Image (cartoon, rainbow, N blue to C red; front, side):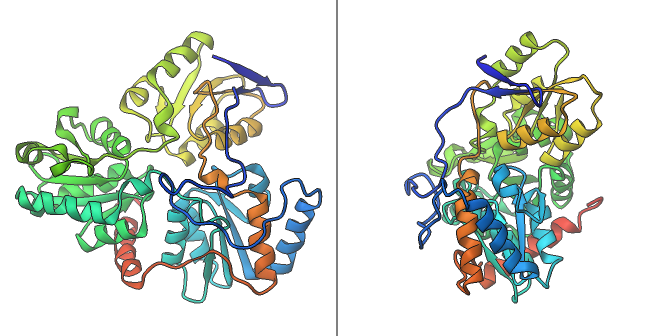
Length: 401
């Protein structure tokens, strides 16, 4: 394990790897996004921070800046509030006086903000190439074709769709149209119980189509609902019939979409073994988007907010290895210099699309608004927005939420 100890925070810094820092280029074959129009400030501009402060001050209460936990520190410094994707969208909806909502996150998060905010508010994504590889693994046409496969197999009527928050507005709308719900990593268990109760309960034969992250669905079903791995099948949209027989679909309880997080999918059971050998009494804490074998090898599993709270409550002097996005782990480590914090992987694992939003893009977006130009506005189709809101409202109505 190649690591560098940051002496000021007791954080074990992973070895560096290549990262596209500015997000001015993109690969259309692998990522959602378009080029941002207009000239971005230079990242080497010595006055960039002051330009950001001036633009933010000029906008005042007309703008509300949201910063996701995985954002760079240079962006978080100008956020009015930080949090996970749904919390941020809710906070934006609670600020109707803000004419502009600058969402420093990724595309699906800005869509959720547009769905939840009023028509008078305009949601801006500083870089349109800030997508989400997981969300893009479930295209609406693929999901509609998958539902047709379930109908042909005679199981669609006994299946409830549940989509993770990390999905496009079109997938949320599909879920709403078909009587399902949205979930987050912290309430997935409650959402799945609700879904199974609609089709005969956990002891019945009903099914859940869980999209787009197979790992969160599997980990929740097996570790929290008591199902077995044999109850889970993976639907691969790139294969005829999802790569499954009608008998496999009929026997399954959890039909998992073949999708994953490119960050959390990197962690391996070997990472857990290595850190335990290197750091005595280490507490391994991972996100439920990690693979099943990583989650079962860890000591604790939880959402981003859970991870933050766990470190807040940890004993001084304790050692932790955290399996989630690196910007967040760095920030948690700095907040707890009295604890030894390690990154679970031995190499850098940023969310590369989240990192496309940097200070040059944020400054460009804010200065454009100051000049009266709204750039990179996110607008969800009205019908999709309606049905996505139905699915989101169903999540908010779940017991204990």
